[in-house]
Image 1 (spheres, helix red, strand yellow):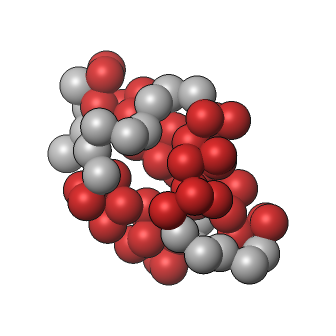
Image 2 (tube, rainbow, N blue to C red):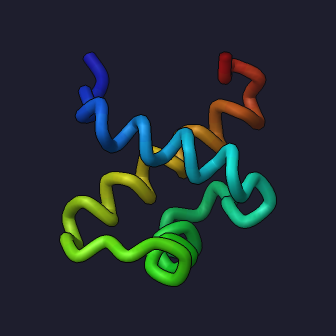
Length: 67
């Protein structure tokens, strides 16, 4: 079974990927740094979860399994 993420994390991640498609990569550390610069997220845990989900979205996009 995979990790279940909150709806809010998915919503924010999809919105950011759609709004800034060229900024994100498959590297979690890079995505975390970019997220800190473009969004004001006070919680480190919340920021990391969003960056991790964006990373998974980019991997799925490369594999062709992103709907």
